[in-house]
Image (tube, rainbow, N blue to C red; front, side):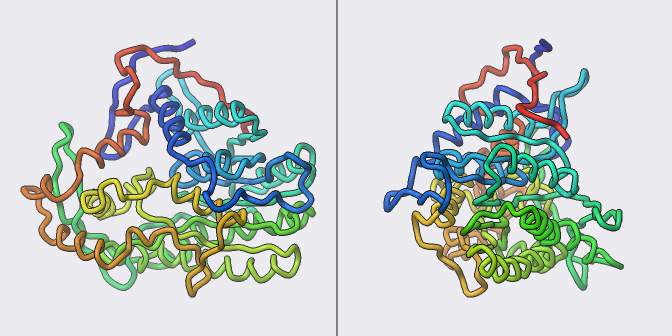
Length: 413
């Protein structure tokens, strides 16, 4: 078994290796942080489910960020079984596996310990090959019924299975260039506040981004599973989304990615109407709060904003697993489904209150390289970025050799 001492090597917010023991401990800590069940009531068993069996769920994008939180919270909070899909890279002679590979192995261990039958598939969620494999597994292993589908996919590219057309998403403002502050760290970890300019969307940038990050693939999953007769009575599905602060709106909610999120929400309304008629089910988008994720660190301004937000909120900043526990409670009927006027589940009220946003905006305005240490929680943010890759996790001995060739806990496609 290949063992070696791993040290963090990175280019900006991108790390070249991941630490298996750190990733394992991170998942275990997430499990411990997730409460057992809602105080008000236990989630109801889906109609027609075998007595004593948990609901059958499909988590698409299960290895990172909010998708990982949905998987862990689903196991502990809702007692799910079923299938988790992600797309991760295996270890090689030169590189460790991706962090999501190791997090998936750790999640599989937790599922087994909890007595939950959760199958982990590694492959392209956009492909019909993966959709067929999932459908076959649902039929053969889980009684041919699906109760929940959580969709949490953030990807740079997508190939349309019908046409073979390849699409690429971009992070650009619409109409004019956007100049914003952003936070970077040098090789020694010293923070710097810079101004960066992002040019506006051109040509078919908006259409390409919507094709990747909008609701097309989510709807295709529902169509595919419905066509195989796999949606249980009362089936519920949620796509995870984000709105964010006015400080980041030009590059995010009002930019190309915002158009994709709008398409995702429009898709939810269409699916909700159809599922209500066919299986008495429903579809929603879940608007989550800010978090440090591998996807969010790529967005200009988000690193600075998140560090400032943490300084304002401290421990009141709600971690993803707590938010997803609340979502599972609503989907499973343990607590009422609370929707805004657009039909979205809102789990971001703690972030977007006027009081919090006013405080963050004042710090944003004052933020420079000289002042940032006193305005943002830099130690927390820098640690969160490293923890995405399994480093800086409390309780892990980083001087000890660690096995890197951890096997995937199930089929690879």
